[in-house]
Image (cartoon, rainbow, N blue to C red; front, side, top):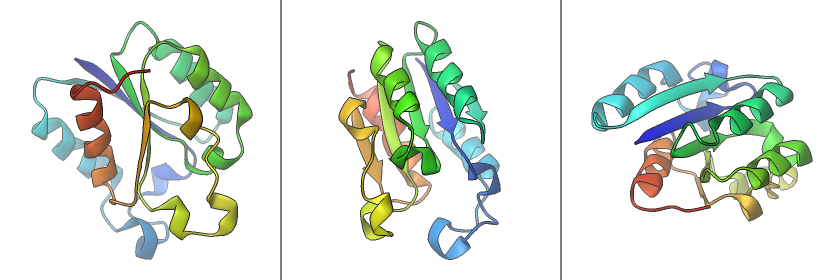
Length: 142
């Protein structure tokens, strides 16, 4: 099984940015632990602060990966183009968020991705990624 972990804007600052909301563990250290928990999974990883690069990554995952775990960050609430990319590919995409977007500011309550994703997981800290991987391994479909 091949799974792409795809992180959007500001997630390169994980562990330093707003640690009261996102925690102090870096994504890099979490990613190493995630890979160790799933030795039979081949993981890819990409992070970008640029919307078009995330769209390209979603499109390029189609036919290469068996699933995508996507934390689109702030683009979750604003990017119709990223939603269209998720909708256009056949690979299942699980939307994840470190914090619960429903417990945050009102402008974060709406996900443009949720209606076209295989599912959405939020509010479990970095473990949201592990739950996203688990969903893909146990049959999340497009």
